Image (cartoon, rainbow, N blue to C red; front, side):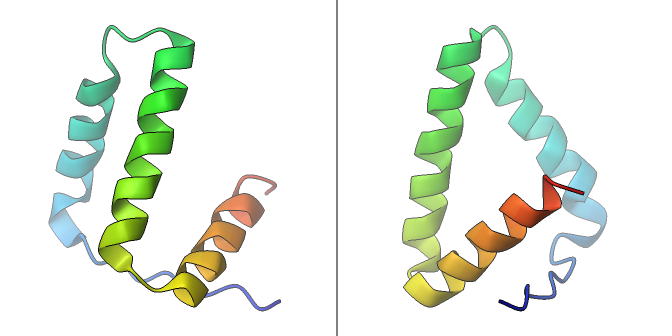
Length: 67
């Protein structure tokens, strides 16, 4: 499977979005943080709404974690 090219769609807002994500995790236990991530993935997947694109992105995320 060829991994998709991931464009930087956040531009200068990337750091701000990352900070907001980290803020959302503040004070959570490890299991609560994992649950938040799972809910966030499902909410964002629903927003994208394209199963084949989501499968490509899941594969890209998995591969990125192995580098």
